[in-house]
Image 1: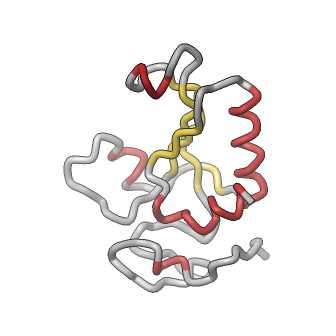
Image 2: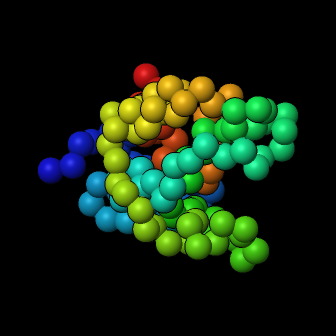
Length: 122
C-alpha cells in the first residue's frame, strides 16, 4: 500500500479543482498520489542570477494540472513518465542536490505535488 500524504484530496491543489483523491485514481494532471520525478539534474543553464556558478538543483516533476498547448516542457509535463517517490524519498533528493553545492533547489511543474513537497521539506 502506498504511503499516504497529509493532504488526502490532492485534486484540490490545482486550478481545475478536479477533486480526485489521487490515492485511488489519477486527477486531470495524470499523477498518482506520490510525486513523479521525470529528471533531477544540476542545471547550469538557468538565468545566471538563479544558477550562479554552481548551477541550480533542478527537479522536473512529471504530469501537469494545466496542460498548456505551448509548454516548453511538453514531453515531461503532459505525460506522467518518471519515477514515483514518497515524500521521504523526495526529501532525500533535495539533500543529495544540496550536497552537490547547488545554489538552490528549482522545482519545475510542482503545483500538483505541493502537499507532498511540503511534507518532504518538513
